[in-house]
Image 1 (tube, rainbow, N blue to C red):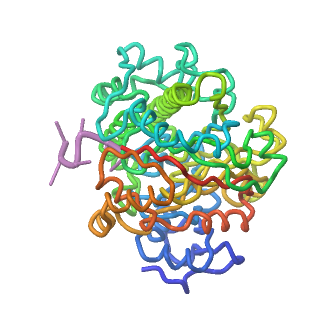
Image 2 (image 1 turned 120 degrees about the horizontal axis):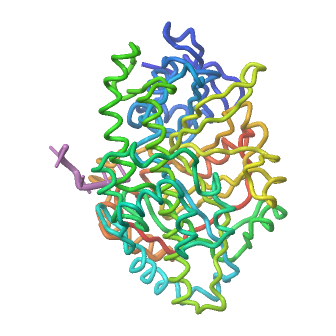
Image 3 (image 1 turned 45 degrees about the horizontal axis):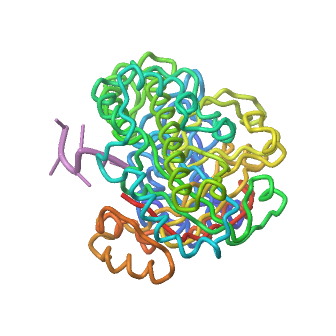
Length: 481
DNA sequence: ATGTTC
């Protein structure tokens, strides 16, 4: 067990578990939290899992835990670990089952006051046009060859097919495509699942939401990002669907043998991994990149569905949706970071954590380079969401990372048991939020009561200096599986 | 998260 006394307070928003806590810890664990969030984090396995992660071979710096943390498969959601390349490991459980789960935000100049009478229709049209729900198939079935192209080209494939604008790709992490993806590293079963699901939302905490830009905290940055107070914006939260899920399932199973072959001492079977330079590690990395590219393409096709839905409701003239940004929050990336005064090549695993690089990063479009990387933080349904920017301090504190959402405090099981979906829908509709959901029990699982207060989470990362506030969004229409 | 127990 871990208790509050095991933490050393670095400052009001940063706490450390030193390596002296456990003889096998390679690096300390740092958690970004206020006291309340720290205490919440001790209620589940989050911190124990972070300590387990700190025992893996080849770790550098420290394991990072974000304020939206909750327990996950092997590694907590809201965790970051960096491993030496070569010499360290790569672990599917430290990326997550939904490879490149992420968020895209689109923005408009449509004023909420003018749009208000049409929002219920808009919700219905979006629900009709954006396939959602477990196992749901999309409107763009892919051949084997096309799936391979999506894996290799990511969002670029959607541009060639007419589902994207060039600016969308500019304003996507990695410009919508990771180099080095190998579709043949994905199993036949993964491919079969992936072929029919491009352009689908999925279920669970995935959603498509129309928001009002409620308050702007940095006028200059908001202007560059096209965020206008009182106007509509759209958030799309989803990932690589059955394709990425199957890839994770396959490699969690296969890498068990790598653990034995390379004699890795695992603190938890769920942290199954392989040396990153091994054939097994490289296989997972190439498959993970395929799923990541699939997810970039998936969110792009959903953006296309969103645009045609807006045109259907508001007409072609007044419905322009410009992309603000698209970020991943379940991904492993080879990056260079300064650790203890030394520049190291590392594999940064971000699971329920976003990249948050500061100003000057060359991988950003020109207009964003002076600002830093946009960080998109969806809240729980019916509450706020936030647009932040990465900072230069994130580079040295959190491997250039920030939080990804509100973070669960109630298990899915408990939420389903305690909350009535149809009653929740009524309450949200009463607050002026149009809800279109395929499953009432699914809706209950995602109730605001099941999550932390996202503004509290955002306050921690902002006070800790790893991201800064640009704008707060408020939902007016939600589409869920 | 997930053809929600291949």
